[in-house]
View 1 (tube, rainbow, N blue to C red):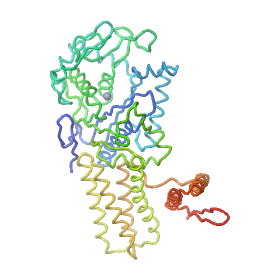
View 2: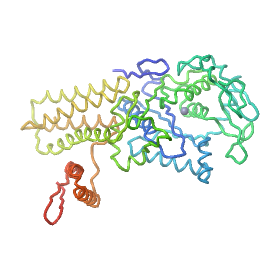
View 3: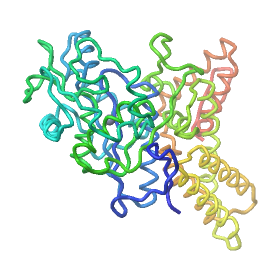
View 4: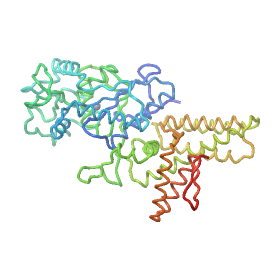
Length: 464
Ligand SMILES: [Zn+2]
């Protein structure tokens, strides 16, 4: 079965045909590294890592590039506010980003290019655009001449005249047409800057992605991806720059993930409802956060709340418990014949899972298939006699399919101190008559083979 992708450029699902047999060249727009990422930034990291994992499961070699914007206005502002240098802040938050997404099961990209490490290439790219008549210098700034690119607006499906209405030249901008956008920005005195043919300055945001995609993946790539909010103007401008410069199609498939709301509200500074991935990971098993993110189709908006996360935890525990029960049962099983129908059932579920993923990476439906598989595993475990082969088939299916989603069924063993701390938390909960939490802690420990025993002398525990 072929993989179908919803292509924003065509506004329809298309069969994926790679440029090169067995390979996927994929570029994902990464973060501007001036603070910790919130869950809205974590979503594309998780979603497109899952896309990558599925391609790899299907035998593709994925060349995955995710850039870091390590110099721009926000970074300069943050550096001024914190009294630090821009590179210091960038290094710190690149480190934090990598740590957070790693915890969320995101595989390391093949390349993590940074703007500041690609300055000669960016300057070359801008020079090329000027030579071809698509850009012009204006008093130390360089702008892209938007009207020189006939197909401008094709990604966001807007006509250039529609865009013209409402566009204004801001104070301090030195452009000829309100639609033109910055390629190179002149540095203010004291600002971090690089030498260029147009004087000291730094690149605009859009040009970095055009340059780095070309450098690491070539003039035409298979998939370009990012959050829905990047469609316009960022990705539209990337297309204009790349196609005007290279005279080639920039990307064959454009993928965009939907927004994330918190308690049904948009995340915003004024509401103060930003949820940082960093904080969330401290409080919850990152596997659950990832599982929650994938429980909704990547193009749809997703609503985040503690209750919904709790629901995801319960769902994921059902799969985990089935997996653990299969493992327990394996020792008591023997090789038996006549269980072909069960093996076929497992194979059918796997095939169904793949069909859902083939259909524009529909993880929401794929997760439903995982539940069907889990239900059958539980049903099978009720048989008086179980076969090692069938048990292993169920196990293998659960591990490989959850592996595509990037979630880990095996739980790390708790160390004694962690168990003691949870027992203390349970005692506190009972004191506060929060029996629900107390029972939850006991059940969670039981699921991890830690048995509690309440005695008049206090709570004892043992490994099951
Ligand atoms: Zn980009």
